[in-house]
Structure formats: structure tokens, C-alpha cells
Length: 427
Figure: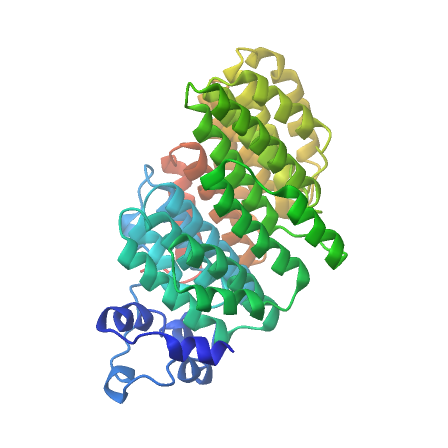
């Protein structure tokens, strides 16, 4: 089926230019030459010979304290010995680039990825560019579809579910999007694809058909976690916020229903979701809807159990919400106690944890303490006896800065440069 989908794409010059940017992936360290040949099957011989490598990651000399994302990318690109870790970290950088509106950076990251995250990031880009560049979005969609044939079944399923959503959003050929949906083998992933289609309907009607989704959930006997449903909930919250901008009481009623549906979807996702609830509570508070913000916060409180990484981000979001409410001073004692507990974790968690506690203190107006913690975070990463995990830790610190608006200090940049130089990777 994937081969049929691939061959059904129109091989236009623009499409070739996009597709060829992915053919460098063998050099990136994740896919064998045979995989590249398989990816290029069916293309003209002269085109196959025209493949060129994409540019390298940001050079050390170009790194700036005002651009933590470039530093995060630089460090992520240095990870070796584990392609999954490399791809995961690069993908996180690509996602952050999208959040910052740096579409070209996101495209460059997508061109470097060597696993199923490449088409996923492309589809994120397609969704982001849909309004301004619909023709270009379609090219990203087609490219992502062509890459499914190189993936393992479970990976292809995840990409196919996203293809169904983005393809329908872009009003792509209905027969093809239907075929994508039918080709998903995993029932939980197929459920997430169905949820995506219902979200597109609710964008028009203001009503999400949760009973229909729940019936499918019961029919499949779902038991596994479905992380893709977090995206469903996030989009429903977006729709609710959009309708709340209206002064029409009916729109507010629809918004309340969308919020309830989003929470119901989270309840059947079987994944930790307190962070999403906190994040959304903050968004509603900033938009002036304190009642909804309180509703979501109280729900988050009941689901505060989380892995170490999410727990540390949760604390930052709690500080942000309390600061918005004018109650920042009440969380400082709790923050200090939580930091003490965090320092008892294994060394591998320290760079990430210290960075997010630095962000919390920065939010509370303690720049000196924040700067000290950030320097300590990068120092802990550099001390890791495993260079791979050192780069992961340092990249996470820089990503935290990018997400929270904190600049990198000179001492942090000096450590980052020293890390790369000590590994013989300075450009």
C-alpha cells in the first residue's frame, strides 16, 4: 500500500527539490545506503545523481547567548552512538524552532532527521504553513507520505495517522487520505486518527463528537497509552479559546463544551497529562478566563504524578501561574524544598532539573540565582563521563532557555565551546 501511495505522487520539479533534501540521511548517521536507494526508487537517473548533503549544524563561532536554540541544535548534532537519542533531541529542537516561527530552521532539522520523526516534523511544518503557503504545505505532505515506505510498521502507523489529519486539513485527495486511514494497523493509533478527523469537524461546528470517539474506544478495547490524543485535546482547547474571543453567549457555550470534550479525551488517553492541563490553565488565565483556568488547574492537581522531566517543567508552570495570580511569594518556600529533593536524583537528571529550576527563579525575579543554576546545569552536563549524555544534558539546558526566554550567559557559552572542542568537534 505504501508503495502505491509513493508512486501516486506527482514527481514535479518542486517536489523533487524537497524530496532530495532528505537523501543525505545516510551521511547523518542513521540510515544505510540501501535505505537511501530504496527511498529514491522510481526517480530519474540524473536526479539520483544530483543528491547533495544539507548544511552542517551551527558553527561554534556563530553561537550567541541571545539564540539558545542554535546552541541546543549545535549540541544535539554532536550526539553519537545512539541514533534514537540523536533523532529525539534534534526533533525537539525542530519543534521548538516551529514554536518560535523559525520555519527554515525547522525544515533544516527535518532534512537531517533519520527516522520517523522526519515526516512527523514535515507534517508539523505543513500544518503551520497551511494558511500562508498552501501549495508548499502540500509538498511537505507529499514528501512525508513518500517516506512511510522506509519505516517500521509501528512508525508508519504514527505517520499515517498524522497524514490523515493534515491531509484532510489541506483538503487533499479524499481517496488517498481514506487509504492512509485504512492502512493503519494499530488500533490505538487508528483511534487517534479518528479523533483528529473529529477535531476538524468540531472546528467547523463547535461540537466535538466525543460519544462517537468513546464508542470506537470501547469497540477496540483500548488499553495502551495513546499519546497522540494529547494533540487532540490541545487542538480542542485552542478551538475553545478561539470561540471565547466572541461576545456571543452561544459561542461561549460551545467553548465550554469543547473544554469538557478536551478533558474527556485526556481521560481516555492513558498517558500522563498534568503538564498539558497546567500549560492550558495558564493560557486561559492570560486570556482572561480565570474560571476555566481554575477548572483545569484543579484537574491537573489530581494528576500531578509525572516522570522526573515533566515534574520539573510542571513546577515551572506552577510558578508561572502563581506569578500571574500575584501570589509568587507563596511558592518560593515550596520551590526551594523541591530543588533540594531534585538534587538527590541521579546525575543524568541534574542538567535538565537545574535548568528548569533556574527558569522558575528567573520567573520570580531572581536573575543572579537563575544564572548561577544555569551555569551549574551546563557544568554538570560537561562533567558527565558519557559524552553522549553530556551533549544531551547541555542541549536540554539550552532548549529550556529557548522555551522560557532566558539568554545563555558567557560562562555557559564558554563551557559549551569547551565541550565541543574537547571532543574534537569544533568546526
